[in-house]
Image (cartoon, rainbow, N blue to C red; front, side, top):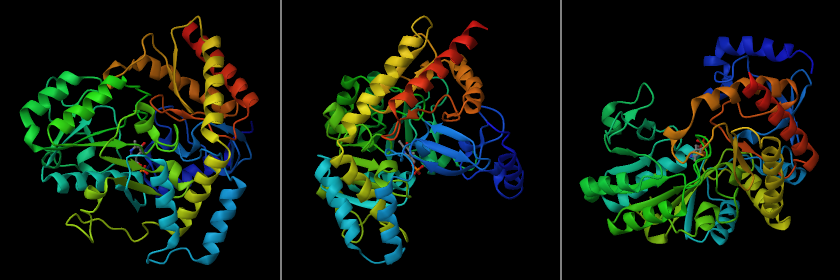
Length: 429
Ligand SMILES: *Cc1c(COP(=O)(O)O)cnc(C)c1O
């Protein structure tokens, strides 16, 4: 690896004109230390920085790149779309095509609407749930990320407080007063929230495969309990599948666990690397949206034809190449390689399909409060060594790794060795 001089120089320029030098905070490497690396281009499972260094990419742009970088068919579809027009601000057939593809694959969906990000998808789904139920409160879970809209930037209050506190400056306490926060895997807490506020609760929102704060796999019974308790109280169940949708299988976590939520949100994979989000559900709920219903929701670039083309091309390849089976096999072998190499140390490997998280602690956590921060520190310290060895891990121990179809078995074996050896040497210190 050559000294990343150009990255350093560009970062120096960036910090003068962009806060922290980045367009999204975790890219700044604050958790792992050192300066961020500036990427120039991608190729399959690899990224190349401005100085020409090559990295095996386990971040996958935080989830979208299920086929790796610059998949030729996706690129071609995008080029074709661009040459026809980058945006029209009118209805287009490609939106219908992607909507039909998504609905045909995801059982609980009868209608979808497209937006430009996961944040917007979730924000719109929650508004729709509130409009549909004529109720204001929502329950979210500590450790689940649902984008950066005000009332979802909430962490669990201290002690037994059920009302969350804003986790960002600039979010008035008043804006989060309808957001109740519970711990994952805690049916008792959710039950007591419903006992207290049941008539006012519009929805429970959860990442059914929580993957933004470690990978906090839930017990299927807990998810089924959420389905039952919401139905019982006339609240909606929203599955935020922005990561898990079209990543863990065709039907996302809903299919994985055999649970039918009322609303689902998508992003990441369905945009094939372009900015896209979508939310959908049953017809009777979705028809409450403007222009049919009273719930307003809009977007200048929503359903953008270039983004739709990238999404359509991606989903077609997922189907043709039987990608989920392939990814699961790659994921399993990566998991096994890590587990074998780490068998003598207290480290767990959590995996669903191609989503992998290394839990540097004895017991695998199901709740955010069970994550051992010492393990996160070890991961964060390891990050720079791996970078120097040409492996790009997500720049925070709370983030999951993504495997794409472009990752070769040999790449994964090599990376597993490097990661395991680094962890073992650090645990010996
Ligand atoms: C990434 C993510 C979001 C936000 O999506 P953006 O496109 O970053 O706005 C929302 N929910 C979940 C579960 C996510 O992983």
